[in-house]
Image (cartoon, rainbow, N blue to C red; front, side, top):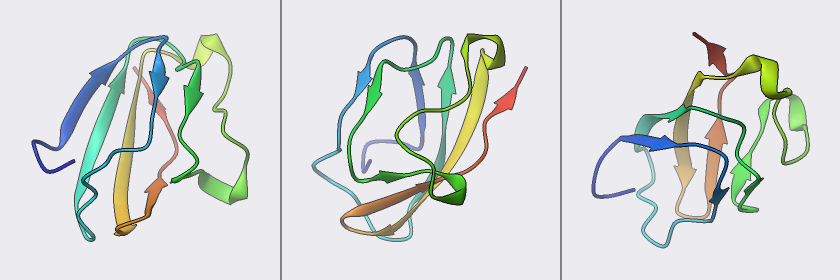
Length: 79
């Protein structure tokens, strides 16, 4: 997460990053639902590691790194 704050992805695995900077913010621009997320990503309302179904994409997902081991994801915004 130190190399930028906007990430483009589709139906791929999104692993835990190795370089989380506490306080960093940014967005994921997703063309399709990711097939999985690393366990350091935390979802709104404590939900599991999945977001809404395919009809919710493409979407923009905001994030904030609350620590060097946790990334809080916001609600996806479909466009």
